[in-house]
Length: 402
Image 1 (cartoon, one colour):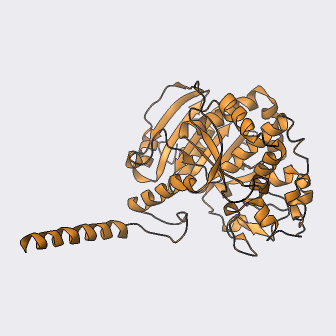
Image 2 (image 1 turned 90 degrees about the vertical axis):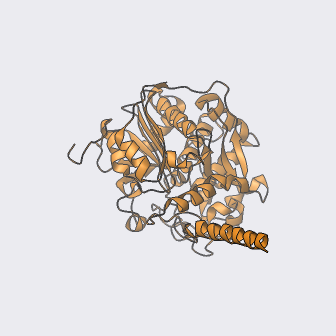
Image 3 (image 1 turned 120 degrees about the vertical axis):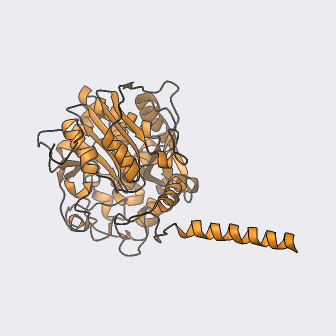
C-alpha cells in the first residue's frame, strides 16, 4: 500500500510539473510570435524550436558545403551594448564585420542549449533578398535575359495577372496585385497563405483569369516565390547546379544552405518558396559576397547596382499598419527585394537591408565595407542602436546623447 501510494505521488508530481511547464508557454494560436507580444523564456524557446524544425515538413533546393569556406580575419571585442541585449532580449546572434574582419561576434547564452554555430537559422523575409541575388546570378549566366524580361513565357502564369509582368515589377513589389494578396492576410479571396502552396495552385485558383491593376507597392510573398520559381523554370533542370555555383563556388559556405520546397506537386508547378536556411556565419558569408560583388563591379555587382538605382519609395496602406518603430517603416525605399533609404542615413550612402519577421536583419554598407547581421526569435531589441547606428557610424552609442 505504501509503495502504491508513493508511485501515485510520484506520478502526480510529474504530471503537475509537466502541466506547469506547459502552462508557462503562451500559444498565440498562430505560427509565429506577434510583433507586439512580450513572450517569456519558455514561450521564446517553444517558438524557436518550431522555427528551426520547420524544414522537416519540406523538401529542399540546396547547395553543399565548401571544404574550403570563405574565412574572415578576426579582431573580436566584447561590446557591452550587445552583451546587454543578449541578457534582456530575444536576440540570438550578433555579427559585425568591417573590411572582411569580424569585430563583434556574440551568441545569446540563454538559447545555446537549442542553437549553436551549426544551427540553420531561418531567414523569414530575408530569403526574398537572397532570391534576388540568385536572380542576379541567373541573369549573369544568361539563364534569364534581363530585369526587363517578362515572365509570361512560363505557362503556369499565362492566365494570371503576372503574364505581362517584368521581373523588375516583381522584385520591386509593383506587379499590380494589390487587390488580390498582401503579406498580412494572404489571398483575400480564400485566406490561403502563398508560402504553403505551389505557384500553380494559386495560379489555377485565386489568380485564374485575373488582370493587373496599376503599379503600386504591395509587399507580399507571391512575387518573390514567382521570381525564384521562374529562375528554376528557366534553368531547365539545372537549378541545383546554379545553387552550387552561387553558394558553394562563390560564397564558399561552410555548411549546406537551402530554400524550402513544397512536397506536393510536380517541379514544373513551382514548388520553391523563398524561405532560406543557413548558419549564422554563412549568412555573413553571403552578405560579404554581395559586398565584394558591388565593390568589384562584377556582373552580379552591376545587378545589385541596377536594382538599387531602380528602387522606388514605399507607399500605401502597408505603411499605415506597419510597426512605426520597426525597420520596415524606417527604410523608406524598396528595390530588388531589398529595403533601402533609411530615413536617418545620408542620402548618398549606398546601403541595403534584408529584413525578416521577428528581428532578422542583415544590413550592408557598400561604401564603408560594413555588415551587421542579426538573428532573433523575437524583435524586442533596440535595432536602431545596435544595427542602424552602428552601420551609420561604425560605433556603439554609450548613451542617448552620443
